[in-house]
Length: 422
Image (tube, helix red, strand yellow):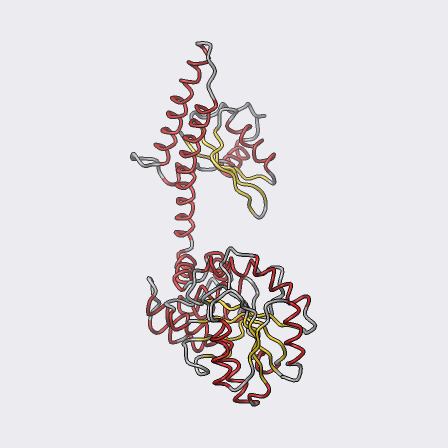
């Protein structure tokens, strides 16, 4: 059995090519959309019978033959051994024949194949198809790595740093072809830094009513205490106030009230929109009012809708910031941000950097969601362990962690260049 790839401007065009070249007995293994059309991978047993073509001059025939004959995937990668693509295709054909035989036998004896039998047959064929698709994709990927080893190495390095595969491939595609490994790495760090946005300490400089939102355990209350303490140091404790809307967590108000007592600022509780309006009116002369909201599970959208209701019905303009753990899985952070599609976010705050072994996930999520980063926290001390987000610090720290903890660290010289790159 052999493999051929066909390219067409659309699915109809590609299928017509398969039928014309291989006939009706060809088996479609996979199809994939490309930027300029569709790719189909088809398998066939016997060489198709070529249709007679009009006679042309010898010179022209030689030229056309050279330009039109495309080597099959099997001819490129070789098909030998029990685990080869050819062997797997033959196994699929054999299994398909064996599974079809009982169906034919039942039909010939006057009994139809029941629904369960058909489901088993389809499941078995689908399983074999998945295995073959996996091997074909792996072979194509290996071919690309052989053709562009530098790009493959840089992509693996960025993924090792915690950058998502899609973002890594995207930035690597812009790497100049004639640069060295060191120059390429510096270029990629600069590119990531240029795409990362920050808010330049906006909460403490612009003030107003600010709500911190996010899942449970991300450190919202401690972060609010740090921001309030910083603002009180700069402008006085009479210019800041704290409010909690958390009516779910035990001792939520008491914890915030303890911070308020230490800072010297008032603390109020509001569990619905009416109470929140009343409290915000009482604090109308305060320059900065920080709202501590209730935490929620990543799959619990009820509290998010409640927070959105608070924001829309309030008499004051509330600026919302999402608090995320920098040491969380990228999928968890991504899903959390997705839950806030209905709420306009001014930025995000990443906490617990001191517990991280990689910062690439944090950088990747912020870039891919176009979400500005406002502050970073790296400990429990109030108000010391908080800093305004800085692109150079974030990228250089991510690169240093990759060198120290990554599976495939860059050389020391490359990581030293990080500070220069960003």
